[in-house]
View 1 (cartoon, one colour):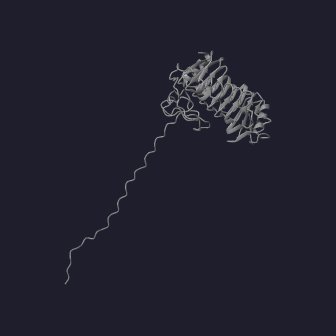
View 2: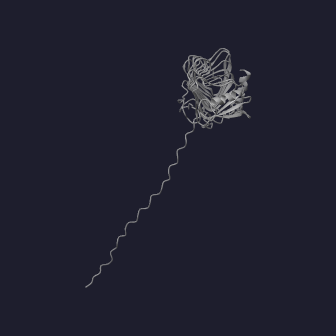
View 3: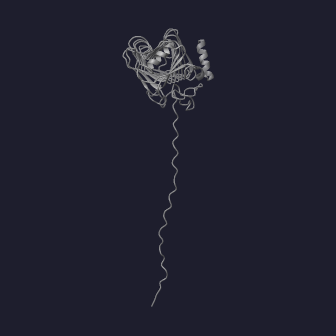
Length: 382
């Protein structure tokens, strides 16, 4: 086990993972704030104009979107939203959606570190290049309570392609890559905490493909992805480790769940579950390798801002892990609900006790019967 894996395992054992691993949920202090005031694609107050301002900024920038708005990218001459500056950029979405409508274009291309908070990135269909939803070939991408869904790239990274990717309470789903990394392609490290990668497709690494360094999973669900090589996860030859605690990894074929190439290895910190036993779990306490079907429900709206997969009754994920300092699941539901935490991104909520029966009212007293006259003694007159 390398030094990186030893440090990560020690953090889990100390129960301080949330503080050490979860990404921030706001822009850097002192960031310039740009508020988007229109959903029109172009002109003053638009999202595209905000990206232009952020590109020219000499300090970090926060772009604030309108609550629940949809920003359709319709200016096909401009194409994607390009952040050409190297300063960090935060998109505070407030539940908004950014949707690419132009054929052959990704959604966002960034040269600086990008954090997306409470937003959905969708509709990218990149004809050539990397990253159908988000591309950051020289920078890092962080999602916080956000989704990258329904994007495609002809090369790698159907959803996201970046140097480093961090997911916190987020979902990457329904993305496609012609090469590696249907959901996520990352050059160095993919960190997932309380997050879901599901329903993505690629030639290899259907859910996640990593070229160098590591995949780190903490209460993550990487399931239902498909590829001929590494349906769920592919660690390419330069990769160092799959490091995991309390997570479920299960592919949807046709390849094995995990493709761990020579030079890469698995470090289980415990309580991990995989479908076909190819992910290298088994050395950690409470590991369950090769369970077959992990018993997950379909991806859907199960509470919280992102889609999730809830373990069904009888799933081997239920009560399978110590909580390791993680107090909530992907949706914000408190952990644990049972005797221990559930494996994966979702904690199944305990059934509410049945309501008490209504009070029984005593029967109303019956009305008194009518009085019956009592005949008196007979009287005779004469």
